[in-house]
Image (spheres, one colour):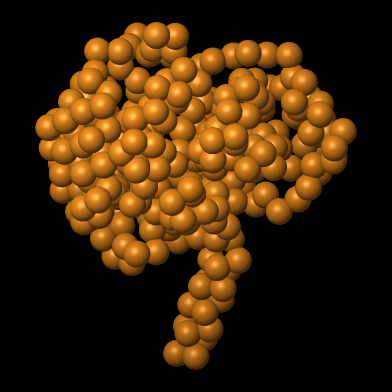
Length: 291
């Protein structure tokens, strides 16, 4: 019995040691810097990956209406303390009007079996939407406590400027912009704008869908630190104060994505900053970057 209790305490201590640090969003909500991305995770694979991640110390889970896995995530977190979790979801592009945003949020809450979302995002900009009405819906959800923070995803600087004009009038903090961001797509101008306007960036596809492992510069730096090229990419993003949500399902990769307690030198950081690529990997048919 004592041995069993000792093992449980050891596991708890290991879990606490690996738990990612938080940042404060512009409305004082705390958001873990490292989360689990769940795009393209479905069925039992998704359930198992989420449970495994929670056991390892993850508490930040990223999903979306269009991922069609909110029910699986709801099932995976049933035995975990909800107040310790940070759950992000996103409203689909087809649901961008006042009443559909409200309904979509309720549907996501039902699938996740939770009373609130820690962060709720507009998944993609849509030139056909009535942005003031959409943002009024988010303000209602925010005031009612159904979402703890509001943000957007895949918004350019022009999109953000337009949104900020309205959210400032509504007294609705625009806290996060979730975008594709990795060493092969260093969106420095966007990062500078967000920093100037106190908007946190979450980097999705932070491993460039595996392409970072083929990069000679990242591989060379990884060898210097006895790490993987993926860990170098994640450390580079964290050093820029970005939130990261790498997708992983194996225990090895889940652990690697938390094992980032090392430092890049100034020279290494500059080398990565200067990788001569502008490789956008996520560009669906409905994406609007320039309207």
